[in-house]
Image 1: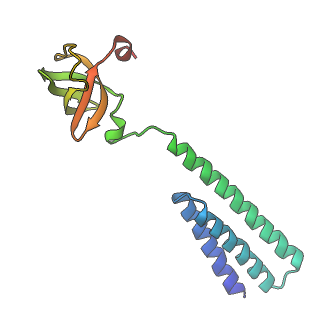
Image 2: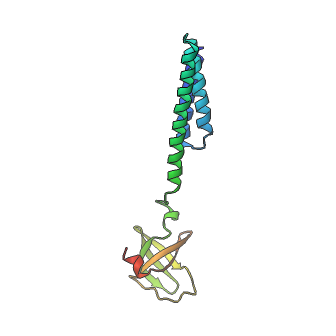
Amino acid sequence: MVEVGVALLLIGVALLVAEAHLPGAILGTAGGIALATGAALAIAGAGAGAAVVVAAVVAALATTAVWLLVATRKSLAVRRLRAASGREALSGRTGIVRSWAGEGGQVFVDGALWRARRNWPEDHEEISAGDAVVVERVSGLTLGVRRAEKWEVDL
């Protein structure tokens, strides 16, 4: 009985660790149940009284609840962060025009040279080399840009 309890304790801990990496509360709940059951079986198998078994189960469930609360808060905090890399992170960034001819050219944004075109073709505001632009969208490897306003450049 003690061996089954210890095995369930290990499985419960493994499921709680997995919950931290894949938040969803299902693995954490199963881990908490396995942890509480394993504690009860291991302690009861060792010959402890019912009061000790109940206290161990309550402690295991309380620990699981705190663990799930922390994991849930951390995962929700990460969802609110803005993308730090990749194409999602380029929207809203400012860059400098390196060359421009007609409706398209090359812009330097976040340390890389990108192909760019006007975001709104009907916008007839001139863009030339050296101008500051703002990335409004990303389409494949081409950025849709507009000329930056003065307040956007002075930040």
